[in-house]
Length: 195
Image (cartoon, rainbow, N blue to C red; front, side):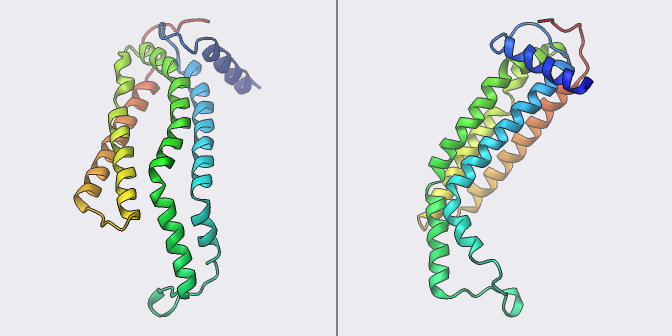
């Protein structure tokens, strides 16, 4: 029961201060709220992906139970291969639109967490600018992957240098995100603000 009380206190505290970037918050004020927001954002992303990938997923599910041939190769009948190729092409040709739709739940997470992250960083004695660290890498990576998938869907080859740049950008994003999380987990340096 104490855990539920902590969760509801955190939700009330952050909902009341959704646009308040001043003050300092403790870990107990931040993390339960952040967890709820991240779960809801993840559900939003899953809904977008399931919607946008539905044709490809339907075609792939129709292949369940197809036995591999010699050497583990799956040799599909030509009509099944054509349907699967068309579903993949449609899915990847729509990657820019999918990226835009994915931006909606991502933007929701950012809006809901922005002030809370700033207060939590202040609570750890850090500048709010640390919260911006992952965003350039995220933006460049999403744009790069969207572009790469669009080119691949239209019959263009995959440029390995472009793919490697995206992989390196994603690694930098994950490192920046891990650093931000480490800062948000730090013990508070001063008493938290009360709402």
